Amino acid sequence: MSQTPVSPDRLAACWAEVRTQSPLTQCLTNIVVAPFTANVLLAAGAAPAMVDNPHEAGDFARVAGGVLVNLGTPYDDTSQAMRAAVRGAREVATPWVLDPVAAGLAWRTSLARELLDAAAPAIIRGNASEILALGGGAGGRGVDATHSTDDSVETARSLARSHGCAVAVSGPVDRLTDGTRSVEVHNGDALMTRVTGVGCALGALMAAAAAVEPDPLLAATTATAALTVAADGAAAASAGPGSFAVALLDELAVLEADTLAERVRLA
Image 1 (cartoon, rainbow, N blue to C red):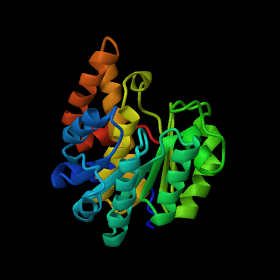
Image 2 (image 1 turned 180 degrees about the vertical axis):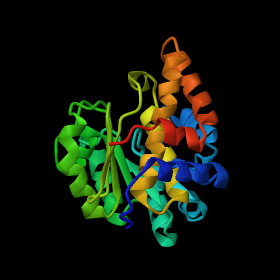
Image 3 (image 1 turned 180 degrees about the horizontal axis):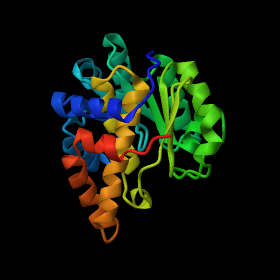
Image 4 (image 1 turned 30 degrees about the vertical axis):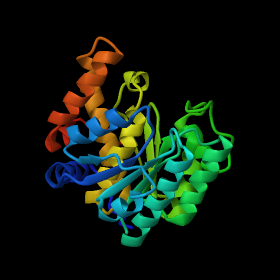
């Protein structure tokens, strides 16, 4: 894994590649957020494919640029599709992203760990409580975090080292690590928590970035920076959650690489 420092210029270059290459991004995600996730990918310039049935999920993962596996609303058939997609991704080294929504609840935590054992992801993305649950903690209140990103730092590093991936912990300050390097993103707005699917869409955006960038930490940070920088602009133009959701797509669609480099706040 590359140890090059994450910088605004490198984020800009990765974002430009997403725009140029329009990576095919397979999403096995939850029923609440599928349309918004697809629209976020389209706004970013990627090509969404919401292929989550067990008959073709594995085959599609072999031709996709990146794959998102989101455990928001798992069913028996979609869990089988997730297993098939992860196997397909492993066979051809397609980068995949795990979003362990509501990890801490027994069945979905077991499924998340099963998928992690089947193939190392490029990125794990979750809130602090979900990341702590993957590390053996109790999790949060369903899909809601009851821990701060500070609480999850050591667990995130441990998971990154164990699985050879990047771990992105979303919160008021986003914290990302590959077990060696760590970075914080200080953009974003509280309205992101008032619209269903923003975090889930971030996982899909990470899969698109991982399709064009082999450094998982850089890919995850690029996606986080792009969405949160867009959120800054959307919040300034919005009256509330409804107009924010529309403005977020608009801001993401016009976000240029040089603007990303200029506006991202890294630490």
